[in-house]
Length: 95
Image 1 (cartoon, rainbow, N blue to C red):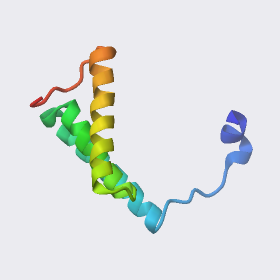
Image 2: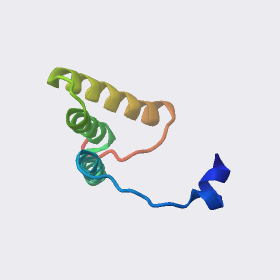
Image 3: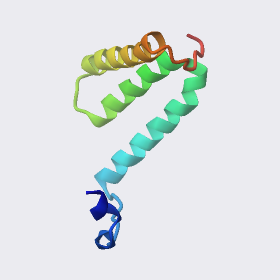
Image 4: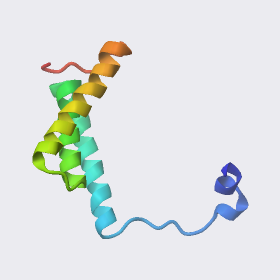
C-alpha cells in the first residue's frame, strides 16, 4: 500500500471536488476555522458542543432535537474525557 502511494505508478491527475462535494468541504473547513477562533473565547466544552451541533445540522438529516442531544453528549463527553480523565489542559474560556 505504501509502495503504491509513493511508487512510480502513483502519478496521475488529482481531481478536486466540485459541486456538492466542494460545498461540503468548504462548510467543513469553515466550521473548523470557526471552532479554532471560538475555542480560546468560549472554552473547550462550549466550543466543541457548538461545533458538533453545527456540523451535525449541516452534514446530516437528523432532527433538531437529535442534533442538539448528540452535539451536547459528544461535545461534553469528549471534552470531559480529555480534560478530566487524561488530564490534558485545554482552553477554558468563559467556562
